[in-house]
Image (cartoon, rainbow, N blue to C red; front, side):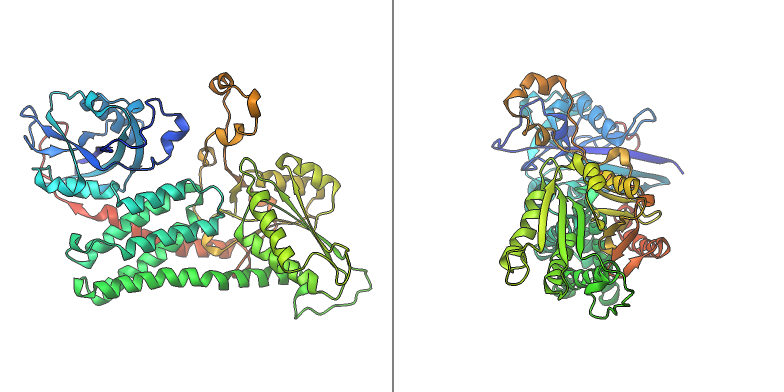
Amino acid sequence: MHKLRLITSLLTISDPPTNVLPQAIPKWKKSLLPQTQGNKILLLKRSEKVSTYQQHWGGITGSLEPSDKSCLQRALADIKEKTGFSEHDLHFIRTGKPLKINNNGVEGLVHPYLFKIVTDPKKIKLDSENSEVSFVEPQKINDYQIVPQLKDIIDRVYLPDKIHTGLYELQRDRSSGALEYTWKSLALLKVATEETPREKFDNLNQTFLYLLNIAHHISVIRPTMSTSIINVVSVILNDAKNFIDTHGSSLDHRAEFQESLSNSIKTYLDSATTVQKRINRNAIQYLFPMFDPNYIDQNSGIEPDYNLSILTTSFSSTILKLLLALCHAVHSSPKPYTLQVTILESRPLNEGALYLAQRLNDYINSNNLRYFPNTKNQRIRITVITDSSVAYYLKTKKVTYCLLGADRVVGEDGSVVNKMGSACMAMAANYYHEGEVPVFVVTQRDKIGEDEDEINMEENEASEVTSSYGQWWTRLSDQFIEVRNVYFEKVDPRLISGYLMEDGLIGLEEMRKIWFTYKKARIIFDMQILRIVKIEFKNIKN
C-alpha cells in the first residue's frame, strides 16, 4: 500500500500588527512562542494549473521528499517556493499531531505546521500553482470554498487565544519546579475543559478529541519538564474516555462529562498534599530515623553525630517541603541536633538562592525554628554557594546527604534529568567520599518516564547568562562569542544511592513496573493520529 507524508503549513498575521518582531529573529527566539498567534490565517487559492481542487482555498501543502532532513525543513522549503517568505520572515509557533488519510488504497499522514509572518505580508510572491491571497479570520473559513479537511488541520495547530496565552506563559516559566509546573499545566487543561465551545461539536467523541489535542500541546511545550504532565494527563484522559465508553457520546451527557473531567483534574491537585506527606514520612524513616516516632534507639554506646548537613541544588518544591518537615523535626527534638542546609545558587536565574533558600529562610523565621529554645544559638543554618564551588565544598565540608529533585527519572535505567549542576554534585560526592555521602533523589512516581537525548536538552537565551557580565560585555562580543545556556543534564544512575518516592525507597525493578503502567496510559495520545480522514487526490504535489 502506497504511503505519503504530507506537510501543510499555515501562516498567520496580526491585523492590525501587534508586537511585530524585527525581521532577523535570533536563533534562540525561533523556538519560543510569539505572545500572540495572529488573528488571521493566510489562504491561497489554487490556480487552474494544478490537477486537483482548482479554485479551492487552502494552506501551503507539499510532499516530504527522500532528501528532506525533517518535516520542518520541507515546510520551510514549500513556504519559500509558494510565497517567497524565507525562514527569516517567519516565527515558528507550533506543529501538531499528524492526521492520517486514506483513500482508494493510498495511505498517508498530514503533518500540520503553524507560523507567524513577522515581515510585511504584502511582500508575498505567489508561484504558478496559486492565483490569489486572502487573510481570513478562522471563524470565517466556511465562507470560502476550501480543500478537504482544512478545518481539521487548522484545529490541530491554531488554538483558542486563552490556550495559546497559557502555553506562552508555561514556556517562559523558568522559576517553577517540575511539580509546580505540572499544577500550572493542569490548571490550563481545566480552563480548556470548562470553556470548550459547545456549538463546535456534535458529540462527546469530538469534544474529547478537541481536549486531547490541547492536552498534547500542553504536554510538549517544554519537553524536558513534560514527563509528569504527560503521565498525569494520560491518566486523566483515560478516565474521560472511559466515561464516554460507559455513558455514550451523546451531548445529553456533556455537563456530566465536563464535571467528571474537572473532578479528575481536581482529584490529582488535591492528592498532591497527601503525596508530599508520604514522601516526607518515607524520607524521615529511611534517612533520618532518629526523628521517626516509631524509632527505637538501640543504645549501641556510640555517640551519635548531632550535626546534620544537607546539600542540594536549584529549586524543587518537593525538596523544599521535605526540608520544612526536617526543620520542624530538628527543632522539636529533645536531643541537640543541628541542621546545615547548603544550596547551590543554580545559575543563571539563581532559583536555588531566590526560591529555595529564601522560602526556606522565610519559613524558619515565621515559625521561630532557627534557634535552640531560650537561646540565641543557631540550630538551623542556610548557606548558598556558587555552582562551580560544589567540588570544593564536598571536599572540605561535612555533608550527611546530597538530595536531588528530578524533572524526569528514566524508567528503564534510573538515570535522572535535573537542573544543570546536579551531575557535578553527584560526581563530586562519589569521588571524594566513595559512597559515604549518599546521593538520594526525592521525587514523585509520576516523574518516571522515557529516556531523553542528552544532546538535545533544553537550551535558553544567552542573555540570561550575559546579563551579569555588565557593561564590558559589548554588542560586538555578543555577535562573535557563542554563549551557551543549557538548563538540564542527566545524572548517571551509578552516582545515585536511592530514589525516595511516595511508595518508599524504590528499586529499579519496581521503577520499571511503574513506567510500564504509564506507558500503557500514554497510548491515549495515539488516538489523534488514528483518526482516518478521506481525501481525494491525484497528484498531491500539484
